[in-house]
Structures are given as structure tokens and as C-alpha cells.
Length: 112
Length: 112
Image 1 (tube, rainbow over the protein chains, first blue to last red):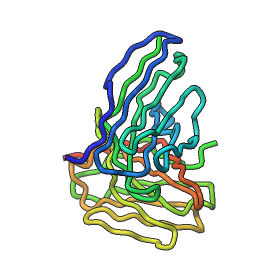
Image 2: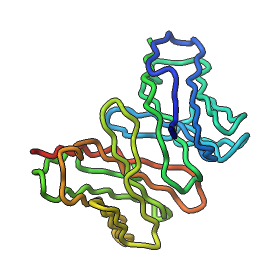
Image 3: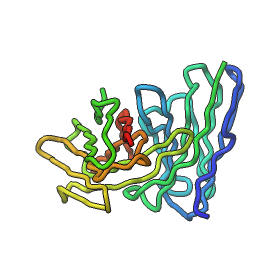
Image 4: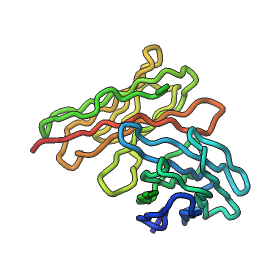
């Protein structure tokens, strides 16, 4: 089954404790991206990747890192999480940048 | 500065009637637009897209209209069904970039 898999689905952590949210797709898609969803703000793009080893900033990249060492994986790294990064995070992939995106089921992160 | 705006946070429509969801944008460089639907506890799913070379695109019950001079697009759902009840996001991308800007979403409720 074609899918985008994020882990974990839920995470509560403390300020400053590094964490990684994993994202994997099995569709051989070139383009992957991360979004956060906050009430009243919709979805905001954090980072995107055009292909392996090619990443770029979205609209809200501060406090986040990403890497794309393999085509299927695109982890989101929070080196020092802060409470304002409490949010619902979505990973997405698409065949190319200008095609429909497939989204994961989301990761609800709470930073206390 | 919200470049993509969905000014109606919510909309209620009777089953069988037409649902019209609106989206306005400010960046004249946007040339590719998409609509996504989101159910609670799930990731967004792609509905329909349109590029700026067209002013209309249809897919079954869903039609997207693009008015470039007004910087406005709309999604028409005919006929509306209770299963269409969800949050709808419009998204836009500018020529030469691979970033996506999403609106804040409109919650559609289709009443049986």
C-alpha cells in the first residue's frame, strides 16, 4: 500500500531535549516536505527536499533541521525543542514538486 | 502576512446542494494551486489542482475555478454529501519555487 509513515504519532517531551520525528515513504517520490498545523494558522511549510541531499527552507524553518540521505526518508530534527514548537506535524511526499502530495497521519508534539 | 487567505472559517450546506469554498491570494507569482481535504486525526488528502494556464478544472463532483485578475479561486462541490464534511485547505506555489503556502482552512459541514 502506498503510504507516508510518520513516527511517533504522539510525543510529549521537555524543553531542550533533542528529538527526531521520522518520515518514510514507499512511493519512490522525489519531493518531500514537513508542515506544522496550528489553530488559526493552517499548515505552514517548515522544510522541503527536492531529492537526496537537496533540502531548502520553507516558511517557518527556525528551530528545525532536516536531512535527506535516502530517497525514502526525511526526518525532522528538533535540536532544542521549545514550548512554541508544540504543534501537529505532517510529513508529505510527491512524485515531483508540482504534483499532488500524499500526507502522513501526523505527529502531535507537546513540549513542556 | 497571509499570502493565501480563506476568509470563511466555516460553512454549512444542506445535503444535495452546492458547496462553494473560496480562497484569495496576494502573490501574483503564484501559478499552481491545489485543494486538500482533511478529516480529524488524519493527514490532508489531495482533491484537485489547477495551474494558471487554465481557469477551470473538474474532477467528478469537484470543480476548481481560477480568476487570475481577481487573485481568487473557488472550489465547488456538487452535489454535497455528508461525507464531504471536513476542513478544506487551498495551497499555492509560485513559479520558479518549490515552496507551498497554505490557507488557514474552511470547515465544511454538510447537513443530512
